[in-house]
Length: 633
Image 1 (cartoon, helix red, strand yellow):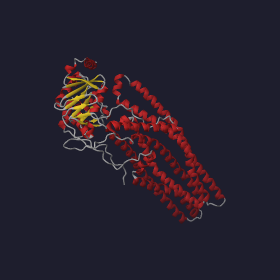
Image 2: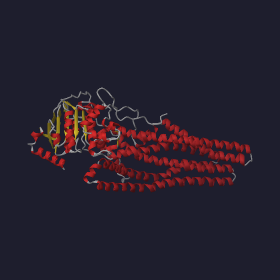
Image 3: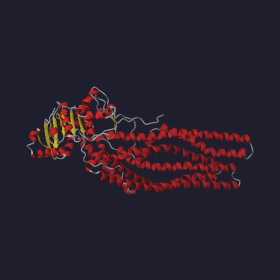
Image 4: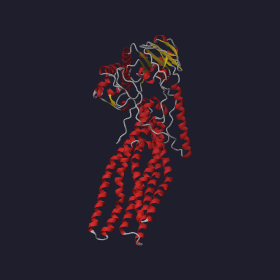
């Protein structure tokens, strides 16, 4: 029996003599049904069919004995107590106690199985989103707001899990309603028909309340996703916000959005209370109706006292499965809302396609970017300089074959204030936007890239080989929680000497000394326990450990002091001698070590030469002078 979903690896990194390299995502045999939210939810729950069946069986062991207890009690009264037959009374009492024991055992076992079912569905949903995020890579923040993706992975997965847990109880509860109705039909046709008719009528009557509840939940879910995105952005840029004094502004924005989420929750609360109250009211009404009619039949002689007690027990019992059905319908509507957002992520696909006739990527060859006119000679340290840092960042991305960050992410769901047709129309519009964006990305990624290495365009090379040969490292690259060794050498490629050498080149030996436990020391999520300079140097060391043929560094020392930057520039120049290194910066400390400096204006390489030669260029001199002023300040 499969109790927990299989591990879904985002990527594989085998240890070989050539070093680690990304490989094709392994097949898990689990391709979600993304045709509609309902189909996806059903697929998610039924992936562990055996566990779901076990939960139904255990729920039956818990609920069926409880359902027949009123009948057993009625038989005890009519055949034993009413006739004064002690032996018969003891026999029926023993059967009743046996039913109680079976129900208790079934309930205890069901609790464990139901929790396993909840976690199974929840973690499967989480891993699907995680796998899709890893599959999309740098395309994910271009396609969808990262805060909403995080909300799908955490909050919505929990809703799917709770639906999986309550689903088995709902199925068994529905079955016990028919069992009780069948017993009642044998003893009183009128009361049995009332139960059979009123139970589905109650569910139908609740639908007018469920639709506005679903819309209110959608508004709350959308606003909560925006709030999560804001929190993610604030945490990611907290140091920058403190530096520019923007904490109060962002804090005020967060408070306003938080109040908006609270208002949406308060709006949904009355509808939720109405649904719960209606479930209680209808269950109570059914119980009162059955007892009243049963009393009339006892007075008329159509029912015995034991049967009346049994009918009262049936009415009391039926409140539980009916409320379970209401809970299931309510959770189902919540799950459909969540599935709409989840499908916004899972329907995405990476834009890359492998070439039909892949070419090997030449090593130690000249790199030419046809779009900008940039020419990078092999085995040299090249520095890209621009008055607009985003221009050199975009150029670095092109060299590594990363799509430009020129599209705004498309929200995963419609605005929470929209209702009915307006909401459906907005969801269609967003889906069309995502499709158009995916088509643009596929067109860009599938055509000629325009960057050649030794005359071979990057579109003719397997993406994995490009990633292995040309490594682009951003100073703001992600830092995950774990050990220092896991941060510096996540691919487990380097030995201790190589890792220590990378720390030395990045001038990060003091970080190793400062972290208790050395290589086994703990790094917090996003490196919160590190200063900006320490974090940046560890990111640089991580890139150096890979030792690629072409290393592209984006502002690798923007957060360190001048003395540390000078050491890094000197050590890295020596460590990378004989290999191609590209750095985007305006710092004179790097420019003095550069074999070649390229001035970039409006995305074009307009001048190339040594630092001393380019100082005669007015534009270059102004940029470098401004960089010196910024470092001095």
